[in-house]
Amino acid sequence: MIKIVFFAALREQLDCSELSISDENIKTVADVKQLLSNKSVQWQQILNNTSLLSAVNHDMVDGSHFVKSGDEVAFFPPVTGG
Amino acid sequence: MSTNTIANVNNATPEEISIQRADFSLADEVALLEQDNATDGAVVTFTGRVRNQNNGNTVSSLTLEHYSGMTEKALEKIITQARERWKIGRIKVIHRIGELHIGDQIVFVGVTSKHRHDAFAANEFIMDYLKVKAPFWKKERIAEGENTSEQWLDAKDSDNNKAKTWS
Image (spheres, rainbow over the protein chains, first blue to last red):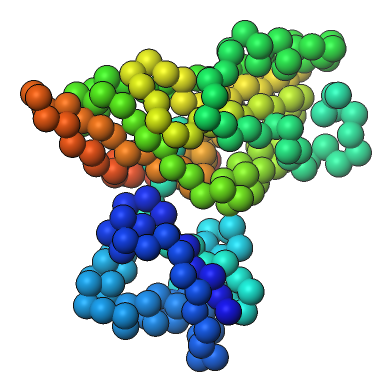
């Protein structure tokens, strides 16, 4: 199982803060995004936003980063703290 | 406890970071940075506050969301990088979350060093990196006449460009 979490505007747009997926074909963060995009046209449009950032196990990574069972994958908009 | 005397001086410690709902006292934080610290002649602090205007809108309040766990890890990494670049004594980073109002303190960065250059540079570096790497998000409540609306802040290119000047 891979845990997926969403934050801020993305969480509100998807109306989802977290979910779990299990799929042996998932190798990278980009694969996770693709699988989530297949849920609906709405999810596809929302996740198609190229400015979205991703993290695996609390480290910022890009789409080519590998994921494995037990990982926590996060998607979120550019950060605006400080 | 003096961070100067621990064996691995480059690693950030949990005491150096606080993510909290409560307000903080600038005087108390400066006192902690200076307490039993005879080696550092420079103390540089930055405090960020909620402004009443942003992008031409009248802001009435802010809500700050964060990614618990990643926030701490990201800030530890930034502090570790700062320690690798400059000779720093103590560091404290505080970031508030939850609902904040006009004039409220949002963020504090305090750095001490023997001489001013290291503390000035490290403080600015930590703030610049926090702005683009630490997972916090601001949602503004905007007053328009009798109506209020909420909107998530967009990240600024200028913040990205400023952070890149350190690489």
